[in-house]
Length: 225
Ligand SMILES: Nc1ncnc2c1ncn2[C@@H]1O[C@H](COP(=O)(O)OP(=O)(O)OP(=O)(O)O)[C@@H](O)[C@H]1O
Image (cartoon, rainbow, N blue to C red):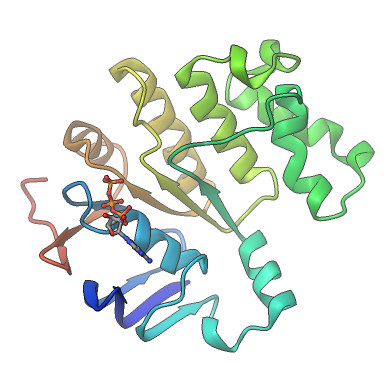
């Protein structure tokens, strides 16, 4: 589904990542961990085409990412839902409209999507907050809204960058539950996190592989994680 073959990423004459080879099979669940600044966000961006590698090849849905033209790249990006680390919203739009934005951007008729949107808001527990403005939301509400926005286009892959960064343990468990449910629906899930407690909790619920960036290289973490 997503395959990195000897991928490297360098900038300013220095190497951030090198010799990264990994396959994310359809329906798999992966964590990406490593110290702050190790390159987790960069690696995620390489997986969804926000960055191009400076060495090696990224294949997504059996296509070499470098060979995709603009339109093909846009189609590919629709099949990957991304929860960004900073989960930004348009502050003047109510939450439900923020979550529906990817539908609008892709030219879908919102009238046909009302039920989908309602179900999704319910699923993340934000139905009562549909009319709230983003600045009124708590950290946990923002993270769940960002997850809802990432999956409203029914992507095949969900990539989340520190989805539990600013929330307490209870909320991080709830977010994890949602990501596990997405995986049970057949979606491929990749989560960058340095929360080892979260990773251990996930491993009791789902067959998750843990990848670790260490000294610019990607390794499979040991069974102790
Ligand atoms: N093109 C670039 N130009 C300059 N600096 C870059 C570039 N790409 C990555 N970096 C730097 O590389 C480092 C790794 O960034 P990245 O955000 O991928 O790490 P991370 O593991 O996700 O960190 P954190 O856990 O703190 O979010 C950062 O210091 C970032 O500023």
